[in-house]
Length: 133
Ligand SMILES: [Zn+2]
Image (cartoon, rainbow, N blue to C red):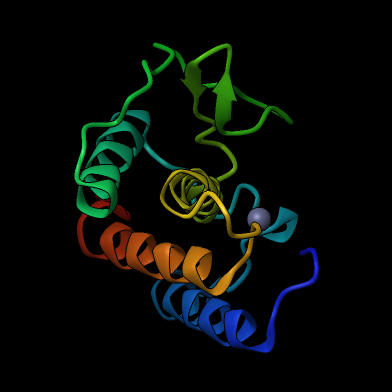
């Protein structure tokens, strides 16, 4: 991860703890790839739900009808959201956390403490409603 404040680091610690407690795997970077693959339908539902909860608006991008695979990332390309389910729930939540932070806190850097808290919220929602469902 790029340089982050001590405070943000502590909040990311909460994210790792949520994953560790629920999946046994506490990373969000490449180390987590493939550990907790997501169901495509559920991933789409999760993204819409967390977006609505955090931004109080409907998710503004169309979602590509098929998941991407391999090294391709979950992200917006040409105004369309592509989702990589293979990389797993931790990775999807991390990516959507970035996207939400970018919209909600446009003046903050990636991995700000605000960004980290969005990732905590997303991780809690995944564990509560989507993981292993
Ligand atoms: Zn990141």
